[in-house]
Amino acid sequence: MKKINKEIRRLIDIIEKYQDFILFTHINPDGDAIGSILGFYYFLLEIGKKPYIFLNSPIPSFYRFLLKGDVNTISNLDRSYNIGIVFDCSDIYRVKEDLNVKEKTKILINIDHHTSNSKFGDINIINEKASSVTEIIYDILTKSKFNISINVAACLLTGLITDTGSFRFSNTTPKSLKVASNLVKIGVDISSISKEIYEKRKLSSLKLLGISLLRINVDKDIAWSFINMEDMEKYNATLEDTEGIIDNLRMLKDVRVVVFFYPINEKTLKVSLRSKDNRIDVSKFAQSFGGGGHKEAAGFQVKNNNSDVYNLVINKLKEFIEENERISFSK
Image (cartoon, rainbow, N blue to C red; front, side, top):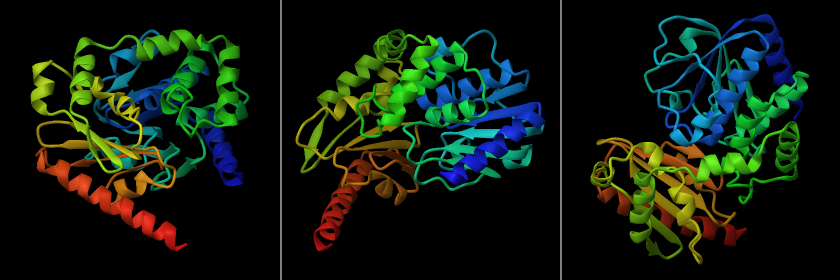
């Protein structure tokens, strides 16, 4: 924790010194990514800085309630910036594979909570115990003595709600609940935020959820399902419509790991993993495929959008679980 506090102090000094900031997060951003990047954007704007947001994917419709006025967004790095800050990315390539982020920033800051983080920044603020990146940002802002506005608070609370599954997942801690309480005290309506996130989905999103539930397969300790490009095209769906499906699949009892396959595009398949057994670290399994994440929530991509991948991954996962149990039993 001392090292994290030291890095936070370095970041605060940099914020005081520089004016020009470019903010990044991962492709297909979730609630924590959007809450982090917008919360920090509003913070910088409110203290008189000049922040910009690089977006490689559109903000999902159910997070656009966080947009207040015009936001300076860019889709190309056509010039250099003093400070770059990357949120919620275990690796720099999660922003965009062919993007030269380091070459376009004088100082690169890496703020994350993934155990698999590659520490790619000049300054790395990595807290694996944090429930979300927005929880880390809360710590940064309180240490900087910044008066958190209601706009910033709404963004930070969004990240907390989504990454903890509305405070249901095991990453919910006394600290995260205290942070949420403090944000609500600022004046944020947690009920309104939850409605925006969970009760304003498109029909295409619910259609995909329905198909996914109908297709659930159970193989020993594993439940898995999928959607394909034909489904996406049939319902005119976009990637944002896939968000949250895996968390519905994990409701099934008597399984230990849940897997959801869905297409990023015609050539790439995303594999999302959730562990319901704290003895099974799905981030380690994801790393074997070049991915990463957390102990109970991880994922990776496969450059093959063929249904044969389903059986390959499930069989490998069964082997991983068996090996994990063998090692645990021998200890």
